[in-house]
Each structure stands twice: as structure tokens, then as C-alpha cells.
Length: 448
Image 1 (cartoon, rainbow, N blue to C red):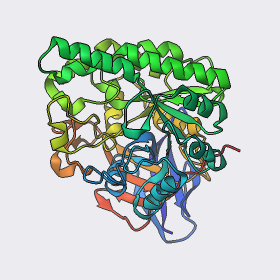
Image 2 (spheres, helix red, strand yellow):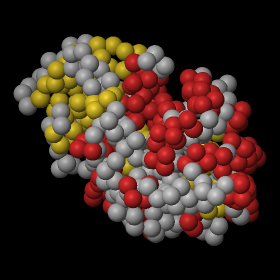
Image 3 (cartoon, helix red, strand yellow):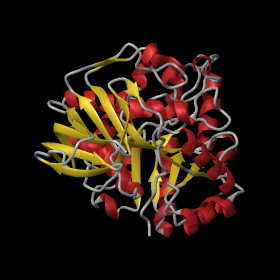
């Protein structure tokens, strides 16, 4: 395996930034020191002067659409988009066709990942009203599966779980992290019917009225109460409202929390004011809401009530997004540009580089107990990204890698550029060139 020596680079890791050298050998970070000279030949040197080295982003919520929805995306195309944006590991959701509702179907997805993914991968076990026995078999695989996904009261095909006895038993008996999508379907339907009675034609700006603050809070509150009742390890995905933030604490270090929360980049960036510009392109579930929510989410992220940043990357075709509001599919392709977006906020003074790395790498690894990843440490896997803060990236259809071929950021120039991405010590992406010969690995978790 090729060795790499990165010289004179700003290493952003564990709350510090320091200029150092880093040696990659046998897929791992072999040495970090102020000055490293290779003991022998065969080492490729990379000049890191003026650039920044970050641990690869770990995205704990993506939808890569394979199997069954590959007209939108597949594991190969979306993992390539991820790597181009500095994401080296992902955790993918079960709402494919067929949905990952049996252990066999779950392992089928892992087999696809092993053959085609350029990034490291894990896949959530799906839950329905009638597959409890299959779900609980995940307890035996707690070191090789990222978690169990429950769509609590939110409609996603046959993954809707609204049977209290099912939910109660899984919360009671699961030894694996439970990740929840929390929206209250009954309230959503009531809001929809009320609005349709008032308006002849619904518009994208109606989305946060139909999927409002109250229905999100109601569902999240139920999940938190169940987790507290049984001591369940609960992780609530894509928090989108100020109201939900009372459910989370910063009074404990992350390693001691039993209830954690994720915020997504689109809820940190867009507000309901942006529907006038983007329309259905930013339609997502849960909805992007009024500006006070974005402000509150940033505050909670910075004071550690919100633990991790993710994307909920959810590509749909251009045609699917351009249907009338009620038919338009919900979801946004984001994985290629999530790190660049957060670096823009660093440049604006909203967040530090150290905090970006904490929330997109360290904390995700800690939250899920990912083994030997998420940090720049000697002996850890060399999942690394080099960023040039003095260069820019302009998004266009010609450089969008996601199979759907569009992005809400088209035409935007980000103030930084990802120049290199290493996955398990392999330089998969470097200065626009690709090496796809070695695939990513199945993530392992230290939950013993």
C-alpha cells in the first residue's frame, strides 16, 4: 500500500490547530510530528503548507437510494460525491425498495457497499409495525451495525411505525442505538386538511405550516420519554425547531449522554424565507422553518445541546422536485457540499474550525462509538481531508457528482476547496483525480 507524507500542514484535531507533518502507512496514521523524514524511499510527499488537514467527515444520515430507487442515486455515485466533499464515512437509511426490514435485506446492502462504495459505510436496520423480532436480532450485531431507525409517526412507505406496543418493546429491549425521525403523522394530516380547506392550491411555503413546530415537538417528546423510561440509547435526527431544544442537555459530556441530537446543514442554512427563491428544491422532512428556529439551532449547536452535524442527503430527480407542491418529493442532495458550507460559516465568524471538526467528525465517532475513526491520532485509520482555505469552489452542473445532477447551491461559490480525500490511507480523490481501485470498509463499533 502506498505511503504518503503530508508536510507542514495545519492539523485541526481535538480542539487544537498546529502545524505538523503526518505519515500515512498501511492504511493508518503512522506518525504525527513536527518534522518527519521518510526512513526509506517509496513515500509520496504532499506539500501542505498553508492548507488544513481535517479528520474525514462522518455523516450519520444519508439516503443513497440503493436498492430499488437507483434512478435517483446509488451507493457508488453518492459515495463518490461524499468523498469529493471530504466525507469519508456514512451511515445510510433503510427506506429503499425493498426496505431493510430483515437481517438478510440489511446484509444485501452491506454487500453492495463492499463492492461499490468509495467511502466507509454502515446501514441502519429498518423498523415497521410488524418486524420487531427481526429488529431485535440487531442486538447480536451491535459492533457491526450503526443502529436501528424508527420513523416515529412519520409516513415513509411501510416504515411508518405508529403502533405503541411495537415502539415500546423496541425501546425496552434494544441494545443498539435507536435513531428516530420524529414527526407526528396525525397532526401533519390534520394541518394538511385544514390548509386545503382554506386554499385552492398549496405552495412550497406551506410546507412548514403543515409540518410545523408542534408536530415535531410532540413526536420528539414521546421518543425522549420512552428513552428515559427504559434508559435507551436514543439519537434524534434532524432537529429543526427551537421548541424541541428543551429536550436536550449540555450538562453532561457526550460520552455520558443517553439521549443525543443531530442538526442538518440545510436547517442551519435555509429558512422559510427561502421558499420564495428555491420552492420545492428545499422541500424536506422535517420542513425548513421560520428564521427564529435557525438562530436557536445555531445557539444549541455551539453550546452542545445539539451534538452532531449531518446532511440527511436525499437526492431526487429534477422532474420529481418540479412537480406541484403536494406531489413534489421531499429531500435535498447535500453530501458533496456540507463541509464547504460549514467552512463558509467559519470564514464568516459563526463557528470555529475546531468546532466544525468536533461536530462533523469527533462527536459522530463518539456518539456511535465508531472504532478508530473520526480523529487524527496515531494508529487510527487514515480517513483525512485536505482543505485549501485560499481557493474557492463554484458549484455547477458540470461538477455535481450526485446522480440527480442538481444542487440548491448551483451558481454559489464556496470560499474553500477540498483538494485531497484519503479513505483508509488511500488517496481516493486528489486535485480532481480519482483512484477508485480500492473500496471503503464496513464501519465497526466499539460497544462491548
